[in-house]
Image (cartoon, rainbow, N blue to C red; front, side, top):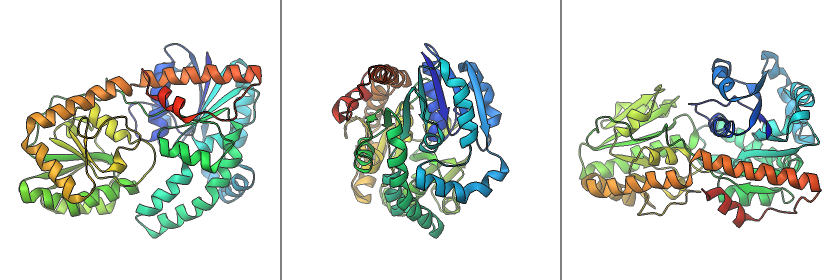
Length: 413
């Protein structure tokens, strides 16, 4: 197939951020069998990573975001709300796709904003959302770290359902990565056809690294400026670590990740807490811990950090919010706690019982190898592309995509 791949951030590996990571892994796998024609917006330092994309894509077209784009933000927001058509980069996207789509079989779009600026074209289109932004607004308001953040998500909660109802039905399929997001998209946009295709993880890159295990060290890795991760780190430091240290006095909480919030950096002054920020390779730091701890309560989608930790063969303890979308079983692939007391008890048990921790870690690694390889995700997308191409050709698009077959497809191979 000739696949037009449109992304609102440049896909490349290794990277952080959902659209770069998800898109990069799909492109890497799909390019083995198909021609990928990438059209990507360039934000932040994306232009420095174009060499990665050139290795896998038959063609690349980039849309830079000019400095003057900020002047358009108010009008763009109004246009997005009224018609589901943001103004920023819309003309560039329109011109690019009108010129290039003639030889393509399907268009894959990463991100709801990109979906809003993709023109209506006579070609099968799939919109990869990752999660429901309507649901994300609700979740982020539960853990917002500032008045500005609460205001932003309050306003977005008003805008997002209308935007979704205008944009999502333009696509033959939308995809998300967890069941709660499927349900919310279907509730918000009843005429949207949505499939569940969970995240994958790169089991070749994320693997147990040979490094010295630090005694009684508990590790958590994430973007440390993102509200659900900040909340998780603070709860562990404030409520769980003191309970762990009652049983294991020298226990250490090691936070590993990008762009730590000031509330996170302030934790480093406490005994038993370490922070490693913006490491070029986080794998040795994560693998140096003895137990991976994920006290996430809020957020949307499947937590890729959990897949990465399992791939690195780490025994894991988490709250229910951290295992949403995972096909594993509590007690076999990870431990799940309902409150700080139970969380601390699980951690102490794993620190004291090395053979139990190893058994849990080994089962987690086997789970991601079986159910969450990126190659399996790419195969599911190939099936989806073929289906929507055929449906468009026949003019027989179904009224809805059933949830259960979509879930089963998402976990095959």
